[in-house]
Length: 380
Image (tube, rainbow, N blue to C red; front, side, top):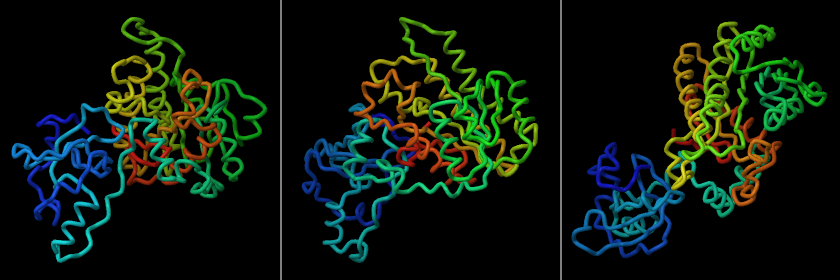
């Protein structure tokens, strides 16, 4: 989604037909301010609301101003019928016998998630989205029975909860950590200790300790220091630390596994966050910026995952990047004051969200960046 200037959507053909709706004479008076519909931007349809309907001749080709739900007002845009989807407009076409009077097609499935976390959560509640609100209604962990799953970064939080859940599903868990615990030892078939993702030698040690082929590789290591990171408080060293762990770490890990011939037949999952979406910074960091080290390192992580997906395509090893959702972990404790408003969940639930998406990975989804809350893609 791009800002609403006249040059905002160069990829779209503004003269293309949108079926009978575009060919019929349209009575825009059936639309009202605040009415929900779908509006097209950059070739995709997004949830939107009517801001204004103009009767001016100067606006004849694009008389409807829309606001894209979850985006700032700078994305508001004037559009015409060919870029709108509304039951009210379709009803006009049916009444006029457009397209042989046949019922129009249903709305296209959503592709991208919403950048506004609160709006995303509120939409899920309004629509009673069971998949979002209660992952157990769709999650079936039996797909992991007998599968060998490597979790890099499993000592606590999301990684530890994934190890516990996989054990209940009779998966063979191989967990890496800096230091282990009795709880982790009881959840994993093999625990590889003293592993540091900032060291390629350490990654080689990990790969050598794995004796049998892997079915899944989940890179979960991450770092988000509780610091003020802005132009008034530049944190260059901490930024480099985050790049070392979150951007270079996955490359070291997958590179070492490839060199040790442990990737054949595996599916690779890189746990990143929505903070790595450049496009979403205009919404989530609007007017404030900040968190440079974390957000830039996550964006670099996402690019690295895409590049790996291309390099490993010939081996038919899919690589998918996942935003695990908003989880109530020590890493997000600094945001505890907004946990409730933004729908943060306990790590055990977050683990099921991640594993649900892991079970759906194929070569067709390789290279995608997916939000585990709703299963929709996040734009890079």
